[in-house]
Image (cartoon, rainbow, N blue to C red):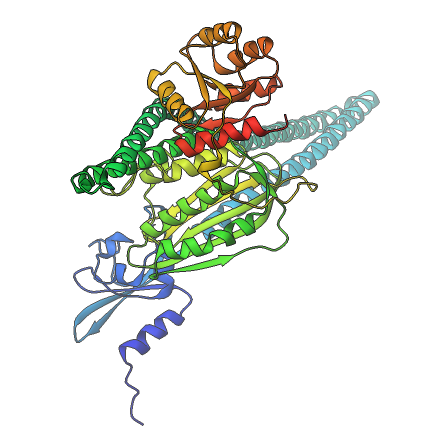
Length: 616
């Protein structure tokens, strides 16, 4: 019968069918073959092992290793650098290509731990046996002591009978002394054995105490790291909020004055000889676009810093994700597959709808950028009950949460990148390709909404970001995300408005917009000036439009004092960074409407009319 010729693929299949990890190494110490179990044991892909030196995994190419050996113990090293104890059996095979070494590698960690456990159990059993033996010897010793005393009594009796039996009595006394000595020797042995039992027990207790101490030390270091991370993020948030406040004031001036210039140039360009103004008009539009992008960056900074005033409402997370699906598919492109899996019967959450949409979009864009050659972007929702403490930047309280997860099959992150991923302006993208505010914005919004963020990522594997948002109470009202259309021509008015802002340019911008739309405008450069005007002005003042953050006297204080003078006056706040101040005022019971800076003509007119036309 002709022998069967084994092909390379058949040989590899046979190696993969074996239960153990197998490596084949040539004379140069290079890996020729590695079965599936070897790649799983050392956490490598096939193409990462073949052709590489075997010392990367185990030192079996060392000249001190025997070519034929069974049960050698060596330290193995996985792909992530972690080490573990292995048992290796080797044999040498002569082939046409030269000598090959076949190595069977087993993870000996479990066996060694089992042997250690067996030693501990045997030691404990031996201690108990020695203690029982000591008790037995003690009992026998006491019995023999009693027997010696009985013999002493017998000797006394014989002595009393006469000199004839003296010699016998002495003999019996000597025998009694011997038996007594042996009994005392056995008592001493029992005491020694008891001391040995106590020593073994004490060593075991000492080892257990050391284990508990090491675990406590690791837990403490982990908590300290989480505290430092939380403090660093809070400091960055305070800095970002302050920067955003100043930027919003500047951007408001740039946007509105550029709009004023644009209007004049548009009218000039519409005249018969107006072609000379077309290029200047394009330049103004570029200024407006740049200022608009700057406004977007400041909003992202405020989201990260948790300084926005959130218009939270009860909403269905699944509906919000479905509403974004069309935009997401256009954003990520055709080379990326979008997979959405939404759990049924999710409870409502309480959040700002616009912020939720911003989270979805930011995470999708980050995932897209991590998959330049294509991949899979997965979005899923689920219900999550937290029943035990989970460590993140802080401890997650017990309760019910709605889980929202975005995963990709992209390039993944290194440990260093993961540590800084949520910090503002941190980016791994090339200059001009990213602001570094995407994940920082997500972190800020989630934290402001009372939720928690988890990031899992491995280089070459992908990234998964999980967000936990508190589930709303059962009686929360479902609220749809709606948009309202305004007609600028209907937003003018004839009322008198008192504008208060310590920034001259902002104050003049608001005055110019309101005046050209029919309003009578009084301006004040400080809170004290506004109160003075409210007291001295002879006519009506229908609305106080005041900045929130001002020197000496902040907006809510100005509003309260003006309302004392004019109880019927309406109040509209404006600010580029107002949340902490207004949040404190809410506790005092003041109702308010906030217009966020930077604003344009449409926004300020909409808000002014909304306050003036309200029933409150």
